[in-house]
Image (cartoon, rainbow over all chains, first blue to last red; front, side, top):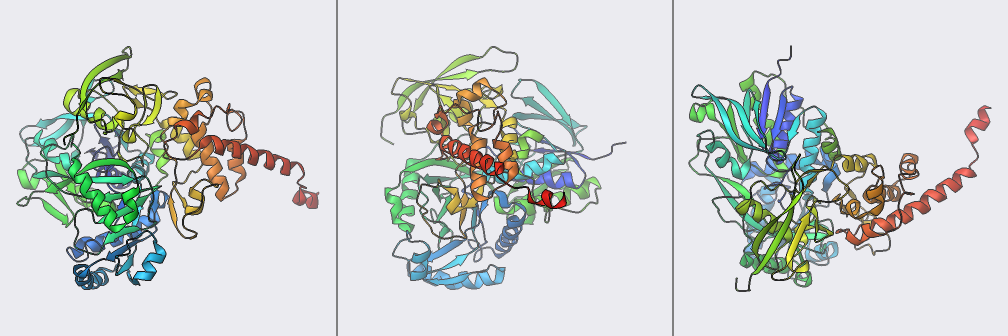
Length: 389
Length: 249
């Protein structure tokens, strides 16, 4: 008899894909429901920075340690879609120089390998960097292809028999008695037909939309979509990721990708993340910031401009912090509602460990004793996602 | 901002299983600078939640949002509205050709990705290999690598007349991928994947693929180069003395 616990994951972003993979390996029967295609929301629209942890090693060392560990791990399991050219943090004024001491000691504490470089060394490595650079550090940053990273996890899940139902929009939940979720109602957006998927447990992995989805179960999750603008330019002006050596700020990072360079980002709050208009003032600000780091960008035409809505978790929330970078709500604990878990926050670099920690919690609830296996296995070829699903 | 808005008619080909395909018209106020995909996303968000389309990165690295815009294959996230119409004009949007349509603008990428997967196409290559061979290498630095140009968008398949007449054809993207892989590493398996009726020899040299490619792959050039490699390989095989077998005989 097949007694595999049946888990439904709503959302096929980084979180949903990595979680589907982890839970499938642990012996769960996994169904992923997604209203669009893979990574059509926040995940697809990230800037593609594979963090080394350098950006957090002063402000949040727990997050920074997590980043460098996952960075090293992804180099092994997801080589296929990541550029590992490293990154530079560059100091351009006195305030940057003052920050550099905190940066260097923070990096050491978090286990991030850095190397101090002189102005000449930096210009030799990256001739297009501003001559205003004073000194800097090299750091093991990278950049990834957002869609293909998500697809790598999704492909690894489907070759182990997870099922992805894309273009299936969740419209409601079937609730047993008063407080147990037993099935999910969806509309198949290709055919327009309504379908019901039964499950033992449902995980809401919809990121910036987590509040909207949980609302359908009558539950409040305090998630606020906080978009930021990103601008891509039609020329690859550096081979490495360029960070300003300062506290994380608007437009302080340039990420090379294919023949492009991407600069990010700003941050503001919106009510609904379905459509976020692009503000020209923000684009202009990015243009100015980009040219400050790499003056050549003044003359490079923009190629794409886009908004990505990060899920910001409300301050007084009752969710459990499985890590500093993301939050998991077991609604049994927070709302007395069984069979429903919400996971939100996090970043692409740490999506695997986020899935691992969430799967630990989910498996405990379901009585599954299998341990996580995703640290060591190389992901399946991302091309296998479509043919296998 | 202060610049004037345009009023444009978006004519989108709608189709669901069992329905007859038909164009639905959405009049839309747009900024001429914004991209076609932004407008389509706005139509979905504000006007018609049943519209289905594919999108992910919105900056031309994922290759998902390929469509036909006014009859020409475009990566819609980087196609400015002003480049395809005028104020008061029409933007006609259809799904890619030579793919099975699942609904509206969504096509089935399964067979295409199977072809691409067979080439063992790697999305990352050393910088020296990632560009076309006649382009200057900006780095001279061997350990550097980058994501290669092909974003597997399928525009080349949609524009290819040979793909229209033969569903078994590997297609420009997969052949370009084989050529790219061969430049890095010779493999007899890759040769075999290129050297057959539905491989490099099916191409009619229409060059439409390179015309629509949004990402500098130049599949037509790569297919021609691949043919030269295939012929050279065949020629070499003719004169190869089967040493090992000879010794055992």
